[in-house]
Amino acid sequence: MNVTNKTTKTFTISDINETQAQDLLSLSVKIFPTEVSASEKETLNNLRQALLSAGLQNKGEQHAD
Image 1 (cartoon, rainbow, N blue to C red):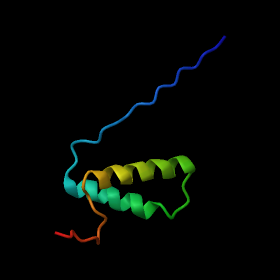
Image 2: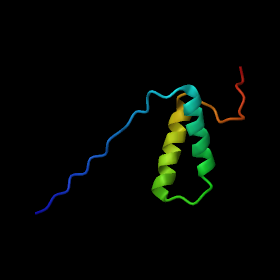
Image 3: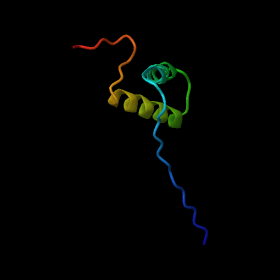
Image 4: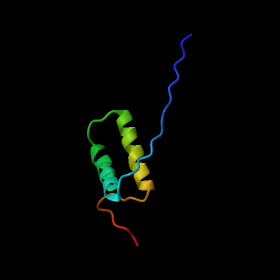
């Protein structure tokens, strides 16, 4: 009997500054309309959600302070 054990690793992005994080958020939004696979779309959406959860805003959005 052959058994395949696949492990999915979770990564933490560190050592990037706020500007770089903002650029990643901007790219994840811009790339969405292009043709990408379902897996790539899910990854981009997860990245976008993580960055938004971290307190970043899409460029062009204003803080309502």
